[in-house]
Length: 249
Image: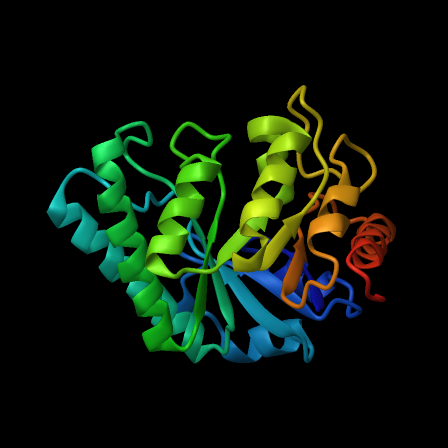
């Protein structure tokens, strides 16, 4: 199991992050960090030997009602994935969003879009992992995400905090119990129901014993998505997660 850190779209933050992490997850896409325009030498220096994962654009929907727009979405993600693969990225996180998450008939469109983007990743040598964002207005619910990930044979980026915001610790437990074998990548942070998110592990209400119970020998990648640059807090969170998942950090 590798433990990494998310750094947004900031190469300076990437360079300043602790070298103890195995990889960094870098946000890419217009308008701030376009993969094809990234200075390779600067990126290599910032990574300092660590591996690279990327997060595809946060605000880009996966599926719309217009076929022409859906084609454009796939073309855009393909361009980013090809560039990310060229930079050596191993995984790319994709938000599971839709123009209408409550339209049951539309779910097949979302599934087809996911299949197309995942295939584009495979062509580029990058594993696309689809992330749960069901706590957001456009995010597909956990049950729907599991369904289309299974249908399209797409690995999952399970965001523990997002799942908690969607349905509490019960939702975290239910998803891990039923679909833990499909999870390739974890986003770990702590949250509180009142709306505080991306806190250091232990500062919120997520029961990480649930993660320990259902992923006792997790061999994927774990990205800390804690919104702080305080190295002490980040390393402490990494140690807490690694301990729960049965490995050292």
